[in-house]
Length: 368
Picture 1 (spheres, helix red, strand yellow):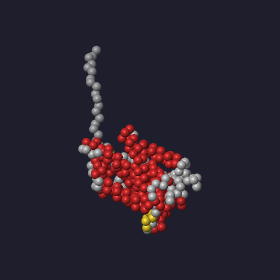
Picture 2 (cartoon, one colour):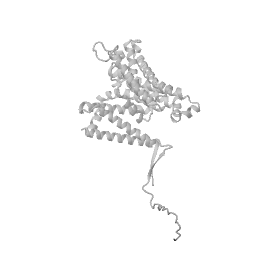
Picture 3 (cartoon, rainbow, N blue to C red):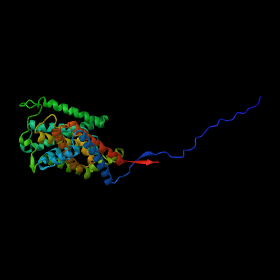
Picture 4 (spheres, one colour):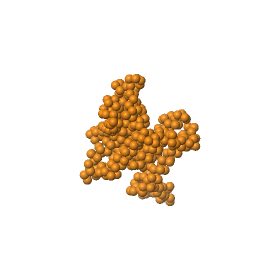
């Protein structure tokens, strides 16, 4: 026999690739971005959302030129009064959402706070509280108190029991709605009509025009904008909000009263929504109804996103959304467009603007 020695096994190693492939995407966090570039991202996203909305309406049978003519018709002198009346509550719900978002609190309970604002205002009328000369003032203060107290329940649930504010505020909307139904189908039902609505407010309890077709509710909204602008840009609490939104733990370490500032800002958010409810029941409706607060959550969030949570920009954005809202009503009446499609368009614009926030905070790069 021949002695055969075993050879070690050979391991083949693949040759290094001659090419580097197609590359890959990387995601970097932006440290800072110029304000004009932020506005460019937001504006581009808004145009994209509007383009998608126009395409949807075109598929529903409304040509873009027809849509443009309807939009121009809304801005005529005879229709402008309706736009300004609608703009007042929209500005206030936008203020409410933006104030809460600045502090990192997702207030999606705007409709519930509007509901209790309307309930508190109607209670002043129904129970004949105060002399007629100051009745509207008392109704407005009561509405702000009602909205602030209702959002405070969500704040308590978050701070005491760690309940997510999104869940708390959304569920409190339903509680407020069914409490409103309890009143309108019960003790506060109009005895003359037997409809689920309160009796009409008296003339001195209605928000009238102050001239040139401008409703006094718009003056309340502008006053809210100025007050919120002072609160955020000039007051100490507004200075604290910048620390709290950036890093709550560090703000607490350096001595910022995080809990007190948070409670005050969120209470102001609810008060703005409560005033929006007061304007609806005291100007548009003239009484407490079942649906005076419906559909304002998406609008408030949309206005807050478009204005970048700046109270002073909210006024302009709220007016533009009012134009969109009145145009949607026109499309419903004359072109049989369902209200759900109008809400879908609002949701598309919200998602488009929200996506711009991602691009503002992050940079996408292609690396080979």
